Length: 180
Image 1: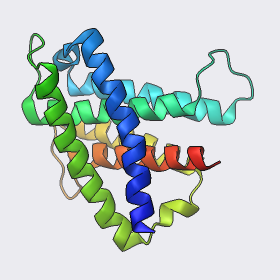
Image 2: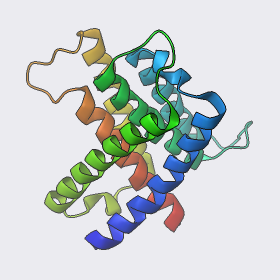
Image 3: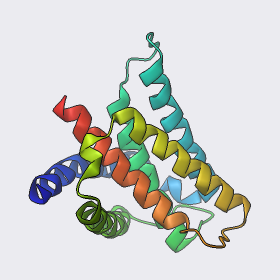
Image 4: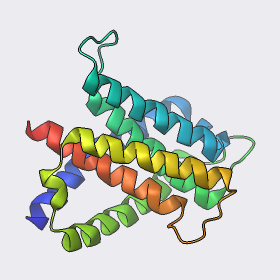
């Protein structure tokens, strides 16, 4: 089962990576000027929209949950890059540099997923997409609190682990949506 999960993970994240590459061609690394709080708010907006799509019967914009989960993945990776490199006043990464950082953070996040998946026995497969959405929103609220505490935690994992969890929960949700 772990090999199946790894292959599904790679398929989903390949789609996310392709979109990231295309957006880098369109916009460059303009996102490098964003503060972590702004990226967190972007992720929050996407997660709230997913929750709204899951609860409301009527949609006024013809985009589904999948594109929003992809957005959460890419914004979370951008957040990990910002957390590592810091915020800049003007775009400073070319496509190759940004992609190398993207791949490094994605690889680290996949390894975390594989380790947790081993310990938890792929429990996510029995979860609902709506529960994964709620967990993502909870992680965002935790990040906001950590940001408000100027990055300091007493006993909790830091911001990076929360972004990684949101990436992994989003991948799991996309696997579920693809399988249904």
